[in-house]
Picture 1 (tube, rainbow, N blue to C red):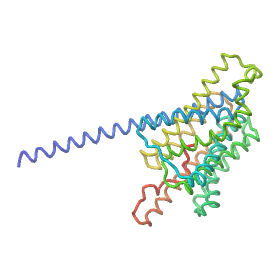
Picture 2 (cartoon, rainbow, N blue to C red; picture 1 turned 135 degrees about the vertical axis):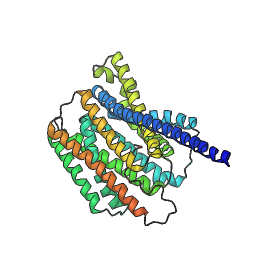
Picture 3 (cartoon, one colour; picture 1 turned 90 degrees about the horizontal axis):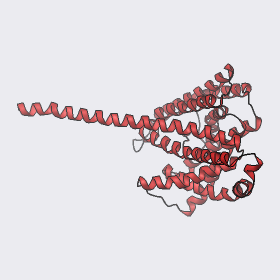
Picture 4 (cartoon, rainbow, N blue to C red; picture 1 turned 45 degrees about the vertical axis):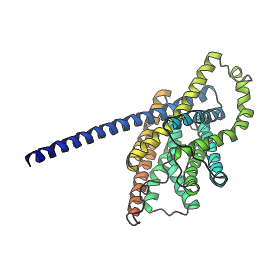
Length: 351
C-alpha cells in the first residue's frame, strides 16, 4: 500500500510536467504564428505600396499574387500530406467559379486602393467590413441582427468618416476602390458560407486562385503583361534594369508574404478560440497601420488618428458582440455539433 501511494504522486508529477511541456510548445507555436502573421501582412502591404509607387500596375501585382499561391501552396500541401480535394461540375458552376471571380475583383480593387491612397487609410476604410457583412447577410442569407450589432457599427462609420475628412492624401477614387474591396471581401465570405459548405480553406484557396489566374491571365497580358515582358514599360517609366530587378524581387516578396499571412492566420485560428483570434486580428491591423505610417514617413493629424482608432475599436467590439451572441444562440441548440457555432461569419482571412 505504501508503494502504491508513493507511485501516485510520481504519476501526477509526470502528468504535470507533460502538460507544462505541451503548454510551452503550444505557446511557442502561437507566438511564432503571430509573428509570421503580423510581419507577413505588414510587409505585404508595405512592399505592395512601394512597388506601386514605382510601377503603377495593379493588375501585375494581382497576377503575381495568384501565381505565387499556385506555386507555393501545392508544395506546402504535399509537404503537410494534405489531400487534394476533387470537386463536381455543379460545385464549379454554382460555387467555385463565382467565388473565384469575387476573389479576383477583390484582390484587384485592393491593389487599386493601395495605388491611390496610403496603406493606413486603406486599412481604416476596410474596417467597414462589418457594415457590408451585416447588409449583405441580411439581403442574401436573410439574417436578422440585434441592436447590439447595429450599435457597434456606429463607431466604425464615424471613425471612417473622420479619417476620410482629415486624410491629408485623400483620393476619391481610392476611397471608392477601398469600399468596393471591402464589399467584395464580405461577399466572398457570405457566398462561401452559403454555397460551398464545409470545404477546408487551403483547397478552396488553391482552386479559386487557379481559376482566378486562368480568367485573369488574358486580360493582364493584353493590358500590362506584354509591355512588361516584351515592351518598353520600364523604359517609359524611367526605370533602370537594376531598379527593375529590385521591383521584381519586391513584387515576388509581397506575393509570398500574402501566401504566408493567409496560412499563418488559418493555422492560428485553428488553435485558439474565436475571441482570441478577433483580438489578434484587430491588433494586426493596428500593427500594419502603425508600421506603414513609420515606413513611409506619413503625416497624420490628431483627428486622423482618432478616426482610425474609433474604426478599429468598433471592429473589435463588433467581433466580441458577434461571438457572444453566437454563444448565446448555441445554448439553445441541440448539442450535436457546435464546434463552429461561436465563430462570427465575417472572419475573412483567406483573401
